[in-house]
Amino acid sequence: MTVRVSIDVDQCQGHGRCFSLAPELFAFDDLGNGVVRGDGTVDETHLDAARLAVANCPEHAVSLEEST
Amino acid sequence: MSDKVPVRDFATDWDHTDPRWVADPYPIWDDLRRRCPVAHTERYGGGWFPTTHDAVSRVAKDTEHFTSRTVVIGNGRPLEDAPPAPIGVAPPISSDPPFHQIARRLILPAFAPGPVNALEPMIRALCRRLLDALAGRGEIDAGSEFAQFIPPAVIIRMLGFPERDEDLFREFVHVVLEGIDQPVEQRIEQFAPIEEYFAVQIEDHRAHPRDDLTTYLLTVEVGGQRLAPEHVFGTMILILVAGIDTTWSAIGASLWHLATNPGDLARLASEPELMATAVEEFLRFYAPVSMARLVKEDVDYLGCPMKRDDWILLGFPAANRDPAVFPDADRFVIDRRENRHLAFGLGIHRCAGSNLARLELRVALEEFIARYPRFELADPAGVTWAPGQVRGPRHLPLRLASREG
Image 1 (cartoon, one colour):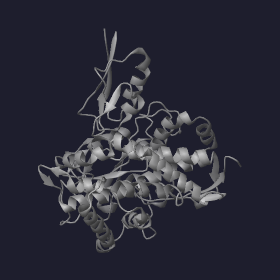
Image 2 (cartoon, one colour):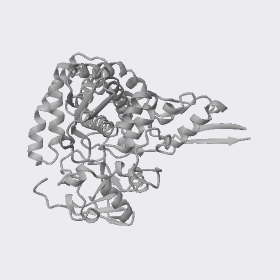
Image 3 (cartoon, chains in turn orange, green):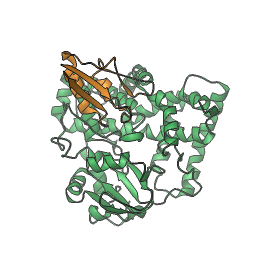
Image 4 (tube, chains in turn brown, green):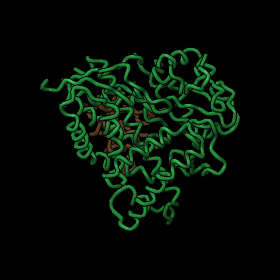
């Protein structure tokens, strides 16, 4: 099973919660908007941080998808 | 305030400057959320006050029905000769799409995490200097002697104005903030020295460009053209107004909470790793800022017959207490893990300075608690809360116990 995070760029307004809570998974661009690191794959150790990033985004811009 | 007719029912006659609202708005908002949930008033020429997280979110994100031409409620509407939408008087907060995005993209890089995080050592040194100056005192006013000093000192450095002008700068802030209720002619008169001062600084930056926000605003180009002088001045005024009493209110309200909740203070002092969730909970629980919108055209919205130019007061602090979104919404939970609060608004007008505000709040609290792990209110009756759309303690008399004491 693979878990991936993604950011809806049309929703992101740069609140900065994702890269504060899960800096291993998210970074920011020069405007301060969130960007996914790499292809967004989340390993076991960062699953909790990924869920926190989703649950704390005020714009509901961060999501987490599981695929097999 | 005293010459106003007292509010009889906030559901049909709300007034955010009413003394009861200023002193403790939360029970009023909880009551309105249960009863309305959108309150109405005939005051200020007519306005609406949504109190749920859902309704506040909808209006904040809807630029089709609502304009940001004016975001501070007053007795009049914007003058006919005021810079009209989409630019407005203080871009980008007063701008609507599509111009809004242009104005916003200009300033966002200056407030992105990279440049903001680089300010941390300066902010920490500043807080320590302020606390050093208060050393030996058993009682201080943490509002007017600590919190109030931090944001102006940070902003004056970002703009690259002389640090020796800090006192003058704070006076300007006072004029801008406290004069909101005054007649327009008087406002214009009061703004004259600010315009003059800014003009001198702008001239100095033109002659001696340097690495700061003022030089940036003077030299940045949009479509091959530099910004119009009124755009530069408007954005400077925005930074002056939006960057100062907001953060100072958040710092003060957080210290007020700790002074009145010794359990939370003891936990934060002994478990500094709680600071990250604590800062977000302070922002949720004591969100200082409510912004306003104007209705563009008559519309039925949220079940209300809204008229053109009616105000909407976006109660982000009220939305933050909505039990439909936050479990135990009326309880301060220092380690709350899921916190989708709206302290910095929502949508395209998300507070551009939110990274800076969070940094200032965290560093101010860290330094204050490191110096004074125990403190309490010295005089509960001496605490005064600012009225209007930015709420925070202006005076906060504290009794201090130092680390040694």
